[in-house]
Image 1 (tube, rainbow, N blue to C red):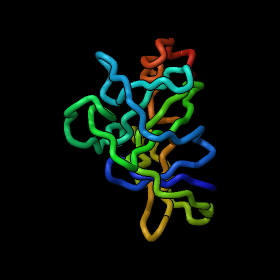
Image 2: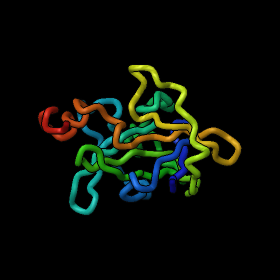
Image 3: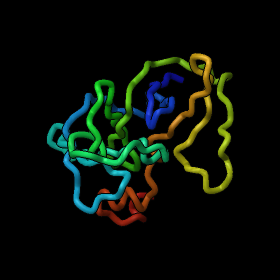
Length: 162
């Protein structure tokens, strides 16, 4: 499997390249009034509105409280920040990461079962992979949002997303 390595919320993660549409440089996000905490804002991407998720918040590793509206959830953009673009149930989304650290080809033999497997564990947490001497969690980007959250972003009925 070819995977993109990145950091979010201070931790190392990876996502299969096949799950990504593109990786963007930081862009000014438009915050939305009454937006859920996981939504950092939206951006105009070639004439389409792209909802951008605060991945650190979704991972439960959110940074300090927002101070200004200059970057994700009000935090200032850092030099290495990127926006990973992907699709979930036909909805185009972005997710802010702190940095992209590389691309690796991973052997299926190296894959390890996730630790959190009980009912109620987030569906977006995938397998563990040894990368550069440390275990790195795979994220299933298409599973970052629950169907009701996707419906909230698109104003559609939840049953249409199934």
